Image (cartoon, rainbow, N blue to C red; front, side, top):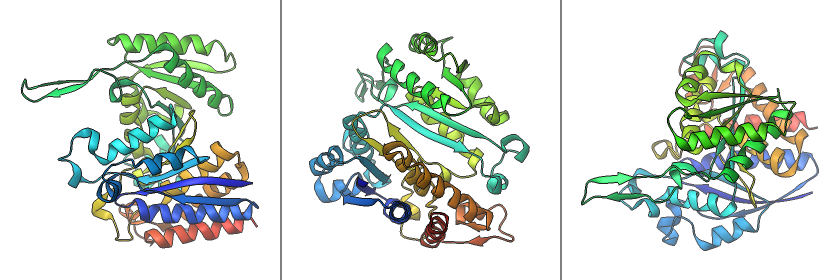
Length: 361
């Protein structure tokens, strides 16, 4: 099989972590007898500097001509003085909108070897395996009208959803749950927001199509507490855009680091894959960034865009085995460095790549 993938390394630590993600992706696909066809384009801050726009037309055209897009991270504080529509993040939002992916998949799982890194007790998080499905094209981030009127000293955003937008992300969630533990938790604020009342009513209707899956509802404030007290109770969590952005970052404490959270956006013309963390420009070019979220994102790319389950499983298993062997990046070794081997970005990537090669012999 030929896998046509557009690579957009982005800003900050993006190029470093992407280099390791691509190396592992190449190892897995080669072992499986597949050909990886890569095209590299700019997005974000580097595109602003070299092309004058955060999403160059050539990048967008290449994305629409690919079978999957693999993105590093975008953003840098030096662009904060620009209007929102001109900042690096606008390139990512524009790409997401153009590709049409409406469901952001963010798996959150507790590696037993990393429970010491979490501020939560091991007995609370051990065995946690949650798939967040965050609606990505609606809500406050895209709703119109929106404005910041400096002269009046006021600003507003609009949270807006249609029934169809909620239906499609809910359906994706139930389909995923059918392959997992058959539980969907829908998160909203239906006791206060009319938008959430539409959300809850629609998800409840969609649930009737999946009688083998159990549906429960949670208010977002209660859910933020439950994630910290009983995360093992959740399987697939479907949530609107803004609430999902916040909850998935909160859930990063379960994994012990944002550097362990992969992400994929599906449902549109082309699927987009990116680690859930930011570009961390202050850590760029120091060989200290954690590449594991990007490597695990490569596994998602193989699984959800090309149905290469064996290769995807090998990558996830390789990450687990490297952690079991006591190897850590700097962010994962802070709390318990005794008996661990701290590796740089390149060295950690090489360890995972070597393990993938062994597993797929």
